[in-house]
Amino acid sequence: MQMHRRHMLAAGIAVIGLSGFAGGQDWPHWRGPNYDGISAEKGFKTEWPKPPPKVWEVELGSAFSGLSCVDGKVYTCGTADKQQVVFCLDAGTGKVIWQTPLEKEYREKQGGDGTRATPTVEAGHVYILGAQGKLVCLDAADGKEVWSRQFDAMPQWGYAGSVLIEGDVAYVTAGGASGTLLALDKKTGKDIWKCGTGKVGYSTPYPFTLDGTRYIVGFMGTDMLIAEAKTGRLGCSIPWKTDWDINAASPIFHDGLLFLSSGYKTGSAVFKLARAGDELKTEKVWPAGEAATDKVILGKFQSAVLDNGDLYVSDEKALKCVEFATGKEKWAERGISNGTVILADGHLVVLSEEGELLIGPVSPKGFTATTKVPVLSGRCWTIPTLYGGKLYVRNFKVAACYDLSGK
Image (cartoon, rainbow, N blue to C red; front, side, top):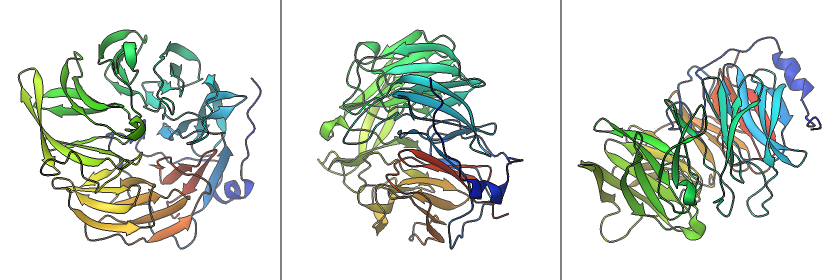
């Protein structure tokens, strides 16, 4: 394979230097350590009248893959030599440590080309599902393949769910005969259990615990199902129809309640879950009445974060705050739509669809941006990562690192 062409911004590197990297809490997979979009980072500077110092920028080729940061390294995907490629970068310099072909390139004219899923890094291994259904486990040190699987129930816009690792098990949304939800031995890739045979959606398996039992949520193409993590036994399923079967945003479980959201005029709902023997009972909490969903949040691919009983999200319409337990909208900032949001140190960190970085205190009373500066151009649909005082962002083809430490 020819070496992938990449461009480093020398000016940015000169400002920051190459010699050291101050590590932070690892961000090892989609939505961070607790699968909720919340970072433990503290003390970063939140007021930037102009863009913060750029540490590095590197061209990776097309992908929507997020940036997982572990032990001073960044793992993400791109496209090179007509193949989807997994990259391992030095977090402090952007230098490519290794790159490994995943599967042939994925071309899609409407949404965009490349890998959709985000690498999951766990116990010295990297797990990633390609857009066309190849699942690989790689050695995190050198990128060499440990095992792989191939699935053949690709949804219309490519496989997008990342791999969930818990204990010795890898959970994936495979689809069809392979199992809508599939549990594998993370060391060998062999089946442990499968649950369902329906269409996959675009969401990552989501774990939660209720009354001492661990469950996995699969937000699929036409329904939501919940399986026991240990046995794969179906706890419950809820029909959830969205145009073109695009269910992509991550569910959120809190205080016995499960939140689901989709775009394309579908909207959101919250369900109360309760154990009933080996099954789970579901009761719709909101919206009230006969309506199946409420359009207060239209999460096409934008996942919300939960803070003190309120959801914060940049959905199809606006950046907004909605009360988790009731669905009541508390505020909405129009003009900040289709963005991605994380929460850190009492602040919302938002990357707009156009590549503008916004930072402001999290509050149910409104959003006042203390930072509103451009950091990227082009289409930006990938969630940012805050790690070691640095913000890692990407657009369709380029990844960049900005120093938010203020030092």
